[in-house]
Image 1 (cartoon, rainbow, N blue to C red):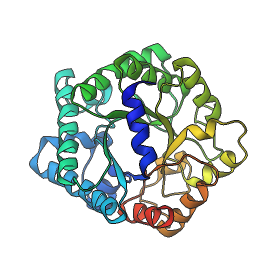
Image 2: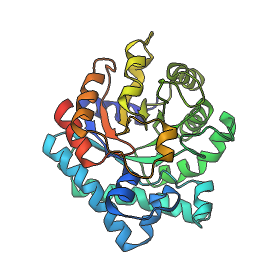
Image 3: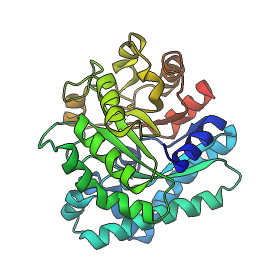
Image 4: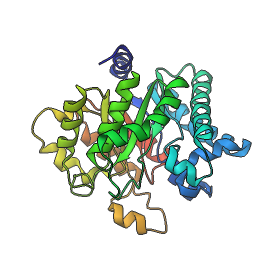
Length: 313
């Protein structure tokens, strides 16, 4: 563990922290924003898009201010890697610039909300492929090399850490942890799970966390679960053996109880029950002793994170 990672963990220990909800689903379904390829980073290219993003993040920072807690500001760069960038007409240089621009926007928002503390700027990374479907699996070394470009750009721009969300198989998470370790930047690794609590690849969450830790000497600052409803993994965590659950410090659940397959086929947003969602987060504290970072994923918006804050802070 390096000094920067120790600093991140010290800030998490000082106070619970909120983060945002499902940026892309909120923009698409609640605000009628067109996001080709679910790529919110493209909004940085226009004044209108930049204001949309700032308004979105400010609402969550106001919530953190109300509760007197910290906040993790995730850049809108989940799709800002080479393969997805090419689909959007961005070359390598343009992608590096947009990742840097996203970090700069988050840093400016941190200054604007200087009374909210601590605020961590996290460079957000997504999977190379589909977040729900395991296809064209990479080796850990291939994943390291692929994601290194984006990690380089985010680190050079001054992100406090990088967070990779919605991973569905082990090797991609391991490769990203390896790349972050080589660059000395703290990394958060977040896997998604199916309704049975296992990764879409069939691996158990505990095995995936244990293997990444074993291969990197425990380099990730912490792990998260995202893009799954709390009911999909509560029982699995409650029955877990060993101390690997202590490595999970963050949670960004889906609003819907639907499976990934059902969500892919859905034509309307299932935003669930925000109040029940908050209560389910509170119940997870009993099985996740180090849970500190609380936010949402697909289908969630400010209402859901407000209920999480009311139930858990």
